[in-house]
Length: 306
Ligand code: ZN
Image 1 (cartoon, rainbow, N blue to C red):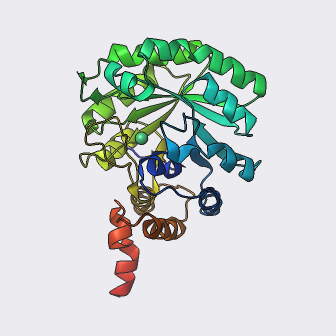
Image 2: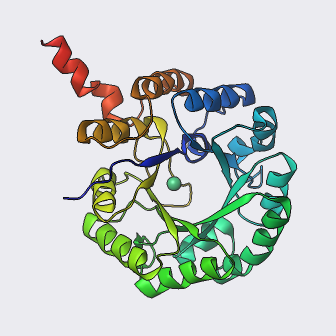
């Protein structure tokens, strides 16, 4: 089994997690959380999204959060954007990195973004142009590259076509997002191997939801296939309002714990993330979906029994 010497984790709980919570965290609280994540060692944080405030009210203050944070040295604070309007908002508040999204599932794209995948793809070029002019970074993500509840297993040609559309407009940093939590390790292994071989010019992120308990196995399969960048969410928060039965992301604590136990560098201070998740658990008023948060670190248990 192959594993990398180090991985890069992007904390997405502030966006993917908080957008699914009934409790809205005040702007000041979000700013404090970003600072704590930076202190815990994160160099990539998905701070929010520039979506319509009526569609996702939890993300309505993303502009304010970015303004308050200002320039952060040595860290990439990114935001999800659905369209050119989102890119314009990002530029206006000092956000330096945006991430576009399109779903490989037609039905998911219609539900999530209210347009066809072709319409989404057609909008990429203007988003890239605006980002380039403003000197900010831009990346892309593909939801449902493995399978969707509506269309079943995603044909590889569909994924290739979207990757090629991103590459055609100059986006070479691409995230494969199992928003439905339907991927299996063998699918992950095959797709990761395929895209790395076919598109060596691209760099990849993997984003797994643990809807059916397969997210950790999928991450391990992706590492085995040479992937080194993963989105994770504190306390395993997350979901998608447009996916039936959607559950949270792979928990940051569990992934950092796995990596530490396997000799894979993350640069993340696990205890600091656990502390943050516990505070958030109190604020949100429900238990977190993180095994390590519930059971504690293996090393603490060993020390307690020594
Ligand atoms: Zn997600």
